[in-house]
Image (cartoon, rainbow, N blue to C red; front, side, top):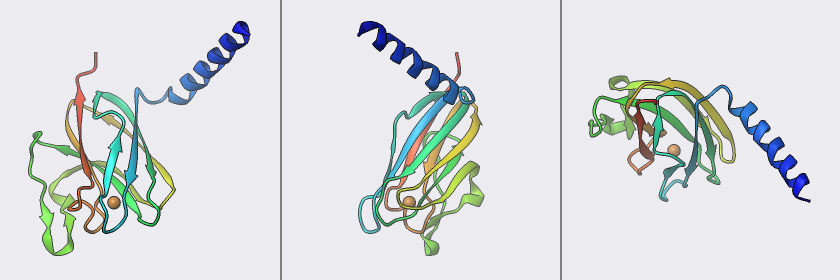
Length: 144
Ligand SMILES: [Cu+2]
C-alpha cells in the first residue's frame, strides 16, 4: 500500500511540473458576485515574485459576465481615474499589462504575462463593477 501511494504522489508531482513549466508563478483568481450584490476578486496570492506569471481566472457567478484587466500602478496608492458618466475606469490613463475580457458565468480564462517588481491592480471594467468593489491589489517582489 505504501509503495502504491508513493508512486501515485510521484506521478501527481510530474503532472504538476509539466503543466506549470511555462510560468514561474500561477495566480488563481475567482470572480464572484452578481449585479446588485457584492462583486469581488478572490486571489489566492496577493504577493508574488517577478517573472513569468499565469493568471487562471474563473467566473463563479451565476448570471454576470466579468473580466480581468491587469494594471501597473505608479505607486501603491495611485488614484484610479473614473469616467463617471459611464461608471467605468478610464483605462487610457492607466498602464494595462493585458486582460481576460468578457468571461461568461461558469467560464474560465487565462492571461500570461512577464511582470517586473512593482504595484499592480486587477480590476473589472464592466459598467459599474469597479465602483461596486471589483478590484484587488497585487504586489510583485524582486525575484530571488
Ligand atoms: Cu465584473
